[in-house]
Length: 247
Image (tube, rainbow, N blue to C red; front, side):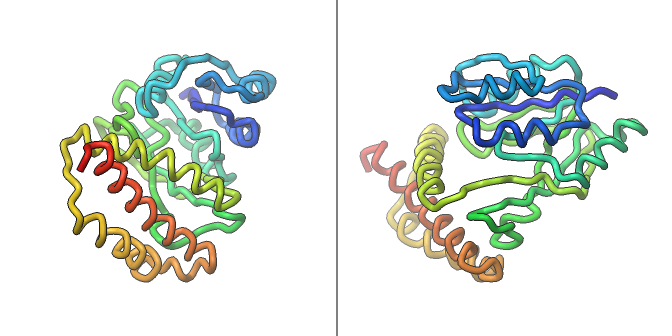
């Protein structure tokens, strides 16, 4: 069993080295770069990755493009701001040694936010399919929240995929602004209408669910920030959808 690691990038010079250096269990690393203006491509190439430039057509399409460029059918797909934990790497080595029993595998994802590992608020375990046989799986999703759809059996690994998210609130706000625009456009394309009750009631409910029901308060001030940003995300998403449709 040989594995191709794939990473899609856009101006990720701060993260790309950490991601690539965690992929020792892979037989090749393919980086699909969306015309970065920083040193992302240079750093990746210097670390042994095969770098291909491709203007981004959407996250799912770009990741499927990455899978097609790989030399091997088994794909380990991570984002540039992610890295394998030692435990997860060891589990993947065992799969390579004994052979896969499933067509895809999920990992729990552990996020670091403002320097703190987040265990509540709906952020953990946050399982994702990231190791899969490309002949039986593909990425789906038009705008945001892309995911892998597996046509077969799915197994579960226990080691964490480490996700290094925002180092500052300003960085989180920039990301939130970009993603809410995509989410609003997705809602419009799906024909979903946003009413005033949804715009007014969903954000406070999101905060209550994240901070209290999902115990975000156990993550301290960072948990409070996450709950607030989750509520703000939904408000902006719905508000942008109404604005873009003129309602």
